[in-house]
Image (cartoon, rainbow over all chains, first blue to last red; front, side, top):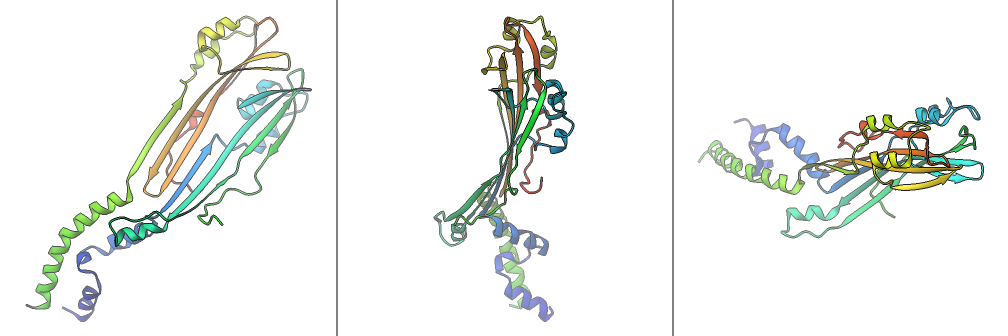
Length: 153
Length: 136
């Protein structure tokens, strides 16, 4: 047996000897990620600003609006007619359980979590005239998309 | 005992331990899940097509779709609102993603209670199970 192999075997914990290197390489990131948690919640589809450009104030009908944007999530009365609202939401949550590492050493490991959630809602208000034609729109967009981050401070 | 024999003994012992370690790791990591949640039943589009503008009444609408989830008054219309929600949740180890979408049916009635307009949007058809939380 050559010296390199002997050195490798002596450095490897006895219970991992014989495990293919590929398996070990895959297990390391899995073990590192085991205390992590990435979650995402998406509500509805993103609002396409280009679809709004197809609408002509005073000309486009309700059905034209529906064709471009779909049915609204909400309708409310307004002094000039009504307002249709469309909503889209994207929320990202990340959490790391630093207590997870203790599972290796102790039968009971405490949870020591750091986590953070970031939400970026998008709301489109479409004003309709009394005659049912499209009047104008207002798109509330988040300043930046949500990010995964575990640091809550 | 030579070094080769010592190594072989450790490997056979290691094989046994590895199997149990793998089972333990699977337990630690959890597993996977695909969960679906629906509120309301899909709107049959043929029933929506049966609504006749200028002819169908509130009663006709209620017979096909039941009582509305909400009634809104706006722009001189009385509007029946029907909603349906669908959600698909995928989870694998440390990653999960929940996609939620809604279908909305709005039926506009004039002062005589006759259907003036029908607005329907289906978002749930395009809803998919996803696990990967990154990207789009």
